[in-house]
Amino acid sequence: MPTLCVRFECLNKITNKNLSFYCFPKARKNVAFLLAQRKLWINALHRSDVTDKQLHHIQICSLHFKMGL
Image (cartoon, rainbow, N blue to C red; front, side):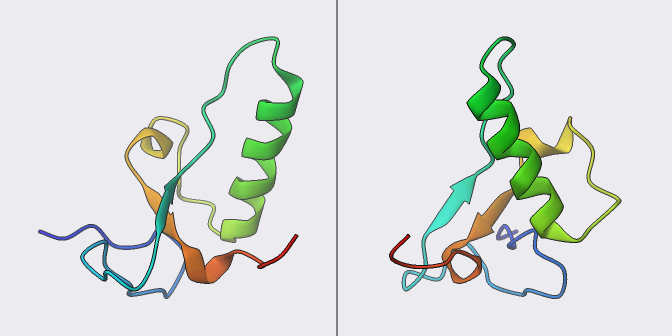
């Protein structure tokens, strides 16, 4: 079964070759930048049902990133 983007109401599948899919930043102790970045990604999802354990297996598609920053 194809993996879907984790963003709420997004139905983009990982099989869509016109998009890129990204894994969430890994949480590493004592690496404040990665922890802060991970928290921003989680907040941007607007979902409260995603757990830390699930973050290892989900991806978000490129449509949800601002370009050129």
